[in-house]
Amino acid sequence: MHVLDRGSDVPDPLAPYLHVDRSRPLHDCWVTGHMVAGLDGTAAVDGKVGPLSTGPDQALFRSMREIADIVLLGAETVRREKYGAVRLGAPAQARRRALGQPAVPPVAVVSRSLDFDWSARVFADAPPDARTHIITCAAADPARRAAAEQVATVVVAGEERVDPAAAVRALAELGHRVVLCEGGPTWLGELVAADRLDELCLSISPLMGGDPLPVAVTPPGAGTARFGLKGVMAEDDTLFLRYERARQEGHGDE
Image 1 (cartoon, rainbow, N blue to C red):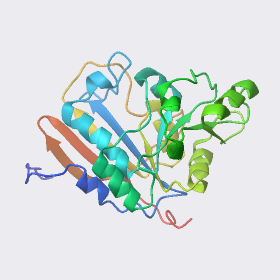
Image 2 (spheres, helix red, strand yellow; image 1 turned 90 degrees about the vertical axis):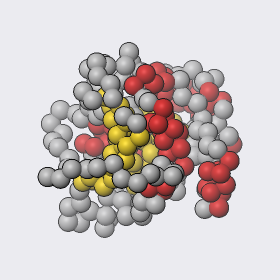
Image 3 (cartoon, one colour; image 1 turned 120 degrees about the vertical axis):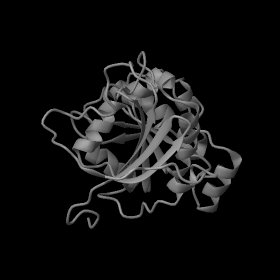
């Protein structure tokens, strides 16, 4: 054991994340989870993440989207947090264009029910080159699927439910090499259980007493997944941890 002392200042908190090599995913494409938790492990306060997040965490959360080819979300997170299209500053947009990417990444929403207000900002505000995606299953209601196709790119991944492995594979086939998952806990747990989470960026907020909801809710019988600590930063009282999935023989060679 050793003490982690505060080191030198980091002029650009995003830089350590931009420099990560994400070219060798466990499976079809690299999946990064980005979450915030209180000191007691809670992932929300009164059902929302906003009251849990600190100023430094909010700044990093917004800027981290620069790394993504697509931002992946569970349906309930989109509804509760009233998500809109991704926005990035002009320098970030310029860096993405220089790499041949759209100025902003599209959003992908996972939903079996397809129970949405299709005029919501997450659909209406998406630019033409970053159209919102809906990831659903074959058993979804045909009328709702038809409505979804009017405002989003619909991806079918699974028969009776959205299969996380199939969803990630479908995004990879669409050319998305880095998928940034921003929750919620249930969908993140599904990705972990399917061994599809390559990286977890976890902010620890100096708060306790939120909802009894952990960062990830894995399905019963899913087992455990081991991660290695790759980076630690701090600003004020907020801690920023970066983990990568511990590799087993054969991983990354598929």
